[in-house]
Length: 428
Image 1 (cartoon, rainbow, N blue to C red):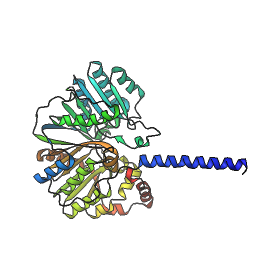
Image 2: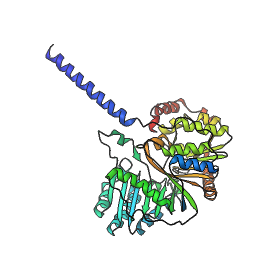
Image 3: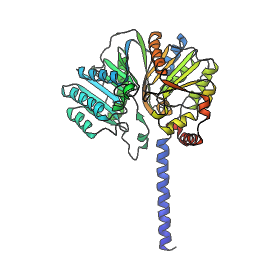
Image 4: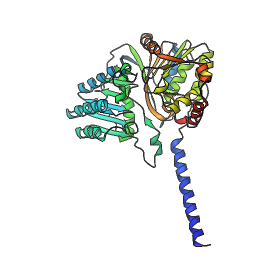
């Protein structure tokens, strides 16, 4: 065998080994864990019944926390002032977790507020998803760290942990002194400032008090423990909390690490328990086939289904077309799909039978159900549901309804884009 031939064989062998190793790493890191629940949920009691409440508590791991209250915050003009005011009032501790973080106005304001709290002696811990905060200037993190804020850039990608590109914290949490908590759909970035009439995103956030706050704090602590191997357990973070309202609120956490995908299971239970109406508001709609089938089953039972989404100009073309390719059966079943026109729609709100409510960070897509860390809160209360239904209906007044005729007239180019994107549907 000549030397050139031997060299070529060695190069080919090394290349093959490297290609195998890379493929193996990509496969292990990119393919999500099993969905766990793969069979339809049947004979689920109505969401209003005691049997449903019992089933939900057992299956999702805990019952609701009585004695809490909630304040609805609408759009950046209400959300950011309330959160910044809470940070500025802190005396003992602040825990903060977000997906998107950037922008000179909003990102800068939160950097200053968190840094100011640390400088006056408040214990401040903050988790920023690495991918979601990659646009933020280094100066903001320097400002916080120099002031004494304990900063984590969560899941910074590395060559040996490729899943960090894919698994993200999508939670939006702020807890002040262990007594006041915030969660909802809004990130911390300039596109959310103001209101839809001014071009700001349409979104909801919620300020909570009472026993439920300890469970929001626990959601933060799960990721802090994973990031720093440190359990923040003192009364600075977990004070005794008195009942301050009449709401029972259940916190549902979901994480790809645990493989249980509780937010997905939460929604499957609620859809199966629907008897009258389902209202779903989300900025991203690409659920798995089982949730799509659950919605169709609900329609067969005579349940009305309304889905509120962003309009075309406020949605990634590829993801939207992939989603739209799957709308045919929904539209044929008279599921009503509405597209919000004034600005980007980013609220996440699920209401079943004007009674069961879910608020929080999860979108209606595979990414939220299988790949992200998410935190939602479930409340079963007619008065609060009536308020949120009225809000939902007001938003519907600024939508255009997408019908079956329009779906059938889509150009083939759009359908092709959708089919190509659907090949990575696990990750949408």
